[in-house]
Image (tube, rainbow, N blue to C red; front, side):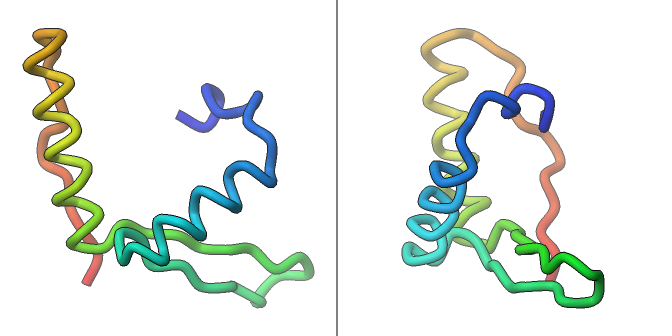
Length: 74
């Protein structure tokens, strides 16, 4: 999936993550274990629910396969 996002500006991704974090749909924290800090992001339970709802709507409109077996870290 990351190859599909190569064209997205870093500032756009940061803004999107910040907005999703404000909604409680992602959990984000900084990892300082390497020489260059990285922002680690994971879906929260609320984010998984929102993603599934969006996927269901898309599937109804397009007849696609959808997301299956999505797991959330606790």
